[in-house]
Image 1 (cartoon, rainbow, N blue to C red):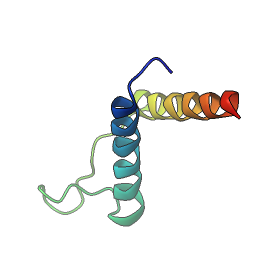
Image 2 (image 1 turned 90 degrees about the vertical axis):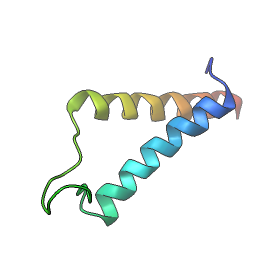
Image 3 (image 1 turned 180 degrees about the horizontal axis):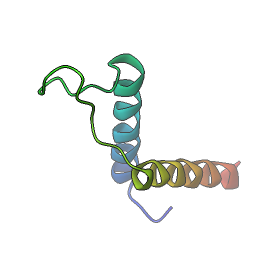
Length: 63
């Protein structure tokens, strides 16, 4: 993938942490008043999807 193992793991951790915020915490930022959600936009989602696809393609090419 052209990245170090550490970088790949860090990116996956960021994606998983965000997923968990959405799934288990209603994506609400606890530092602000109730109801304020963490920011997200189409670019962030697209970047995460592209990264996951790259990981899957890399695994697929190995096996």
